[in-house]
Amino acid sequence: MTGRRNDVAIVGAAETTELGRIPNLSQIGLHADAALNAMKDAGLTPKDIDGVATAGETPTTIAHYLGITPKWVDGTAVGGCSFMIHVRHAAAAIEAGLAKTILITHGESGRSGIARSRPAVSPGSLQGQFELPYGPMGPPTLFTIPVLRYMKTYGITEEQLAMVAVVQREWAAKNPRATFRDPITVDDVLNSRMIAYPFRLLMCCLVTDGGGALILTAAERAKDFPRKPVYLLGTGESVETPMVSQMEDFTSSRAFRVAGPTAFEEAGITHADVDHLMIYDAFAHLPLYGLEDLGFCKKGEAAAFIGERNTAPPSSSAKAGRLPLNTNGGGLSYMHSGMYGMYALQESVRQMRGIAPAQVPGAKISVCHGVGGMFAASGTVIMTNEEGI
Amino acid sequence: MPEGQRPKPQPTPETQHFWDGTKAGELRLQRCASCSKVYFPPRPFCPACASREVGVFTASGKGRLYSYVIHHRPVPGFTPPYAIAVVELDEGPRMMTNITGCPQTPEALVLDMPVEVAFERLDDDITLPLFRPAKG
Image 1 (spheres, one colour):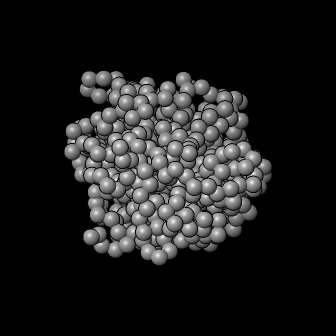
Image 2 (spheres, one colour; image 1 turned 60 degrees about the vertical axis):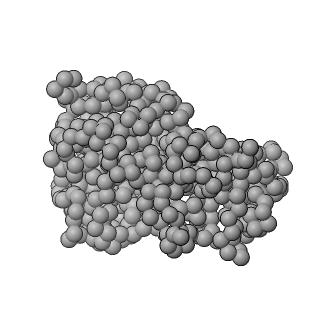
Image 3 (spheres, rainbow over the protein chains, first blue to last red; image 1 turned 90 degrees about the vertical axis):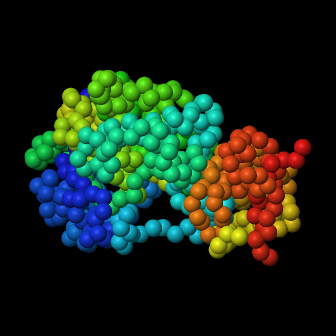
């Protein structure tokens, strides 16, 4: 390994004790439950933490609630990939000596809605003036708008879009914590309730309660912790536009095309080196955009790549695909609280620790790619379980 | 009639010319005097070259249907199913809108079909630029 950032490691990682429906915890309680689990995982107490990053809540709220006195904070909140970006910023802060032990938290009462903070869009903002008057109602009607253009450009069918959800359900079936585990077919997806054409219910993510937290420190300290360290190899971030209607290219995300290659360049790896991949899947088209924009597939070829089972788990009739993707079941079947990026990171850490429910045998490098808003932002984190040289 | 009202935009000093235009039956865009870029949404400088030398002009109101979804769930001010669309104007910029004057179905809403602006008055202050299939 010759990555630039293998000098920082993840030494604590945990999700909330429960996932799904958690009626006894508010948003801040979910942050705290995950943070306490991550600190226990790392053998630390709040007194050992000197840096805090979070989205949804402010670092102030989290630090005070947990009894942490930080020397460094990051409240970057650009949607569901905020946590990938927190990892990037935390790595830079540790390298610069601004903090030694950084806690990143997420918690969201997406289903129960207990004390959930949701930013209001002003009617005078650009979205308020030039998008909201036309009747979008949240991500199912906004994130999805570019897809018909993508499908026409590359001749992609609704059946191919449905196949993304089918394959991810196969992964979810192997995961006892996944919300939906029963197998589904392309017909099941295409016969599920229409939400926003061409998107059916089973092409849309879950809405659940949950949280997750990570603890980062310098790699040279990592061996002093109880768990197998997971080293950061490369990271990237970018933003494009708060208005999906103003994306430069409806068949590709500019933020993906900046964040992904930045992380690969920093890691000094090629696509052939990648053993495991997470691509934030709020909706079924996101893995297609991600596979192409990160360079795993040529433009327009990701749907066929998934259809040919290159990302699928082993089945009775076929061996495992060469690029295991969204091995927890993804936002489509595992869980999705609203800002799913933290759960993608948790699965990458589990895979690198070798403890994932659907473990990829011998996996050494995991790429974890997130999206924020409606193609508004992106963050990519590349991890390895091999110590840097 | 749908229940409730659709969200109403609140013009700002930087966008007032656009909403004055729709009220007068004109679709107004901006063009940079330095690099000729035509852009949307409105702002008092060019997003391509940052020049403040920009002007407002009346666009043709013609374009093509670029992408859309058809929403099937209830929203105040709308009767589902209804399309939330993006049109690409002949002058270049894209904008979100609704498509009127045709069924809200995949069969009627064909990508790249020509569309033209159809102004929809909400009240004394606000007229929205919707689009309909182009005549002829």
